[in-house]
Length: 108
Image (tube, rainbow, N blue to C red; front, side):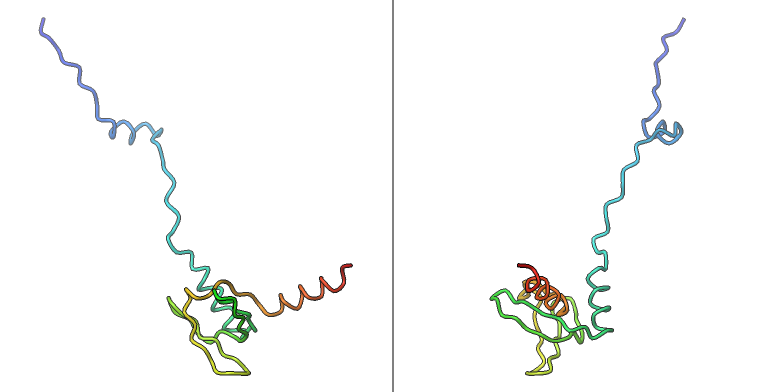
């Protein structure tokens, strides 16, 4: 009798054939294009917006265009502005301000 070695198959081969391989979820995409969709929607409708800057200043107007680092805000009263995105704290539709005003005036 001769000595025999036990040969074990590679684990990658076993995973591929058994159907029980561990599947990992793909990482979420780095960009969802939500920002792009939001800006395009507001630009197309020329939605009046309120932009609050980091220093607390409030600007009103509509977004004409945007790029990776800035937005252009057109205004009826005053010059049009090119605003760097890093200086924007947040922004919202002007109609939200009117809705909030109505709620606070009707509640005691």
